[in-house]
Image: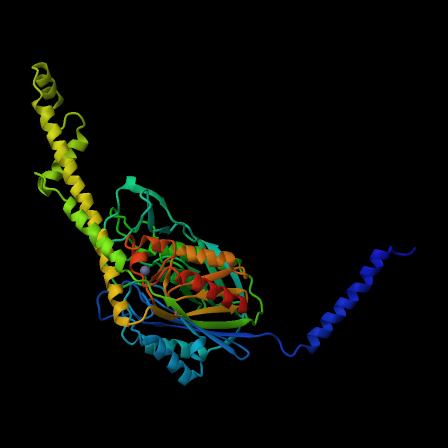
Length: 508
Ligand SMILES: [Zn+2]
């Protein structure tokens, strides 16, 4: 009996494929190898006050063939411009790494977690120390990429009002009344994870990317790396063997910790941090690491247009005047307003006396109590209106101050553009685009969606700092929220950046 033709073809095919594989393996020049070293150094400023938990600079040095990439993460608000890390930090670190370790400046990425902790003045020295230690301890690694999910710890802080304008949730000013709020913006629950294992299977490092302002703080306001510091600690404690977790802040420009305005309980970054850390670990455990030597890092200078806020400042000044003029004199003051408010909220129809007194008056044809209540209610309403106007003024004035600050810097700079560095990193299947500003979450979601590489992750707060970077659409709201006021960019910036990011991603 002859075997059917199809089966015969199959039988001859298998040995051929097998032979090819053997041939390829024996003639391949060498086994793909990615080397990695990791280190962390405490950068907490212990002279400025009490410390709740340490702040770190962490360095991951990657080497594949002739390519080197260094990823540095630091528990600080920004790389230059604001906070304790000064503008000379990045050039200093880069030139020292080039001189001491032969690492090209363009191979270095530095991401700030954006926590509001205080780092020591010699943070540059300690950064170089971390990279040096990591570079001196390179070992072969196997890598893997995955995505985790965490959607319980953050919220979009931009509130869309029924008027069409947007305000944001800040401690710097009051929220608008509940009945003015129509909708909230999106969040990005994805945790981007790169896992690097030593050859014996022990995890060397975990890089994780997530979008949220780490500004929950700790009771008493002590120095803290905040929720992302706690998350990293949870990951490191669970993995053991000296594994280092490097947090890379994502597009958290308009993302706050949830319960940011909880006035009923002490706020503590550890609660959210534990959740983020455990959700990251769940993703880490699902990743299977394998040999993969792909390592690419491209960076490009990009010139972005600055926004001229003259008109917006004029219109907000007019709004400020209108609000001031809207404050009307009332007979009440705070001392009389508060007890009256409670009484009138509590006692319904009979705020000024027991119900029988009202009934007694009514039986005699008198309405003194009812008239008295009507007058009090009018005064309460007027006083309340003043409070709401005052709250709106706090928002207008805070954002106006930000606009004036950036307008003054625009004039002083003598130019209408700002130069930034955009970078794209590939480590195996892990792809990451970086930008120096505080990207709002929609920008990250859009880049992820359009990227040819799945998954792609996006980091703001990297290699410099240029304040907030909201969408062109969000910039129509200039003066209403922090992200559009604490911003130096013109709306055209978004397309320029997104085109640049797309081109860089294509090259990976
Ligand atoms: Zn911020």
